[in-house]
Length: 259
Image 1: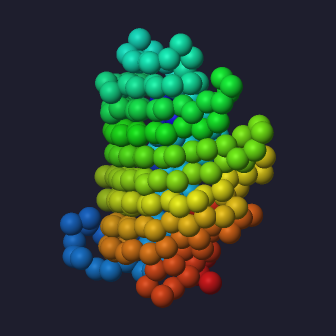
Image 2: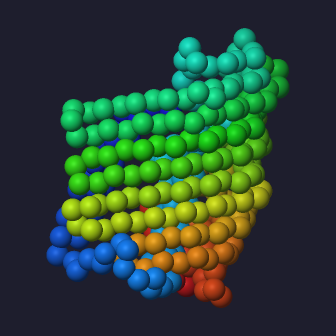
């Protein structure tokens, strides 16, 4: 679980700059215009990017790259029912972090986190979590709102916990606005993950498992409201299926390719 904003803001600024540079020569559509349907390729790309980034903790909350011991960054607000942050309860229901970089980059994260760390012989072997985090930020030419809710059950599967399982639901609502270029993206996804097997020694490759999802979104290219399934294949790939169509997701880049 990543509570710090300092490393995220420069990355977001870079993304916004690249995005705006790519849209300068494009004809844009007023966000309020019409209810046209986005192409399947636009929708699949948005779903794939949301999936890959939210599982990796890019928008806040727990990340599969944390393994079985997500960082809690304990502060005076933390309410702990254990002498060891790695065993027992960790609760913070009054999270409020603010970060400003100069006059241009600003972000505020609020919400709460609840963890129960499962131990065996004083060694963490997994955790149960309930995260609910909201991040609001802005920079030169862009603004964003990230709303992440996770209810994960994570358990180690081998001696050093380099392999672990993940089950549970996640909500990832990601809104981005670029007013100068009249472009926007709103992707509101919910997932239910089942029997995900993560191989930590292979850059946290999800080698098996499934998920159901619902995605509601809207961009300048149109909107969508789809439900479907995801099958994790290993080798950092997953199969996305909706509307009787299949797309292959690259879990490292978040790209989707029709099959």
